[in-house]
Image (tube, rainbow, N blue to C red; front, side):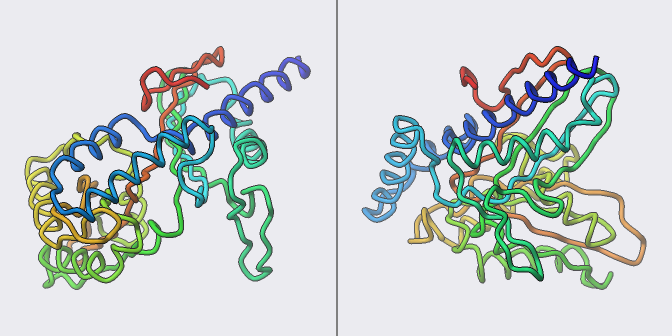
Length: 300
């Protein structure tokens, strides 16, 4: 039995290592489709040149089997695990093994630096890294999201709690102030994730989970969906354009996730994804068969 468990652990780690490597080299279908749409809307020579370079980069990444961006980020996983998935207890160890293997084989740039010691592990593992966020549900499948959080797209991130009199207008102002100040660092066009809640930890987590939603989905509250649309149009008006070199569009989408708040607080958080938004989703069943849900026809 122990040998069988070890074999299953190795199989799961191998699947996830290949999943990481694939995700570093291929953007998800929804991101590719949105970039192609935005490309057609730009008419300035500079914007067209930047988009041409982006798609040329993606073609070379696929043909040469190399990451599409040299910053392969800090590996963040969001697991939606069924209670009957057989390797729940081994998942964290499998993720660490997979991160080290993918760093070697993909290859990935080693990015995990320990606080205080200022030491790079060399294999993208470290204290609480790869990051793992859990959601336990009924069933036997594991839905595993991977997000490669690069340094540039993490720079605009922030979370703060507002005085209640600042209202939702204060949240919108904080978002605009941050995008105007730091958005260019995240390699536009951006995917903007916004979290709203009663405390900074809740808002920050929701802003990151907002980046996991597929482009084209809407907030489940009609008022939230309307705010997503209005914020997207207004942020486009800033004119960051592809690569931050100016253009008609600044964002691929704005996604908002919310939690009920305390009567006296409004917390807002912002997370951004760059044009090379490496967010992937794989479903693994109890027999360790896998299905890529973010890349139709993709193979591990």
